Image (cartoon, rainbow, N blue to C red; front, top):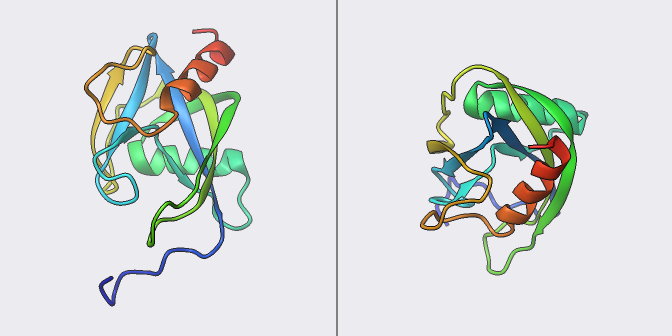
Length: 143
């Protein structure tokens, strides 16, 4: 591990993500760095101390994509447990959301985006459990 790389957290980290629906499609983003480099996932990230889940979700979606969203509700959660040294432990609270305004403008954490059908396409490298979360969000949002 390079000297300037931070050590992975020693406790589980709380994170949020959003299944954002627009015209019947879902926004997927591709991670540009670890964890998850090269994988398509939902926009989101860690909750900061003193921040509510809703505040964190609006902040993370704004930082990563520049979009304004309406949060519909909690679609589910997922736990990512480290399987090898250097990996983090995350509990991700995933919400269903609707696009309100803006076009995706990615930050340096992401290198691509696509709007896809909720039946996620074959051929994309997807984070584990993504289809299950999208299906749950779809039912909640009535899409």
